[in-house]
Image (cartoon, rainbow, N blue to C red; front, side, top):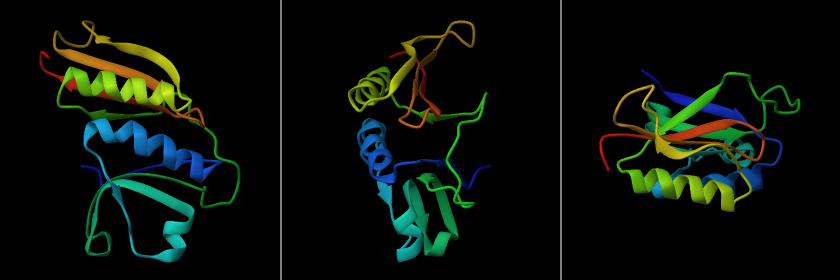
Length: 136
């Protein structure tokens, strides 16, 4: 369904450090395009292969229009976690890296009996979540 998601950032170096730590518990590693111009203004995690012909990635970077990055009201990206502990570790890494809690780890019974999630705001105010569907 998706090829990629891209969030703007006003400080790429800080965003990279934040997401390196936050996405590591979920098993997500950095991907590099090999295009020095692109890799200078953005960073991605997930899959980027064959010049982007095979891509499923999350990117942060400078907005294309060179304006300040802003957040969208109601916008969020939720990453899949394989266990509740991955969700907990994601949340802890986000807070340790300067993120803001927007929903502590826990079951969200109003969504489903097995919907365990945590919500945070990154350094630019973007909302991200980690979600595990399944008990423990």
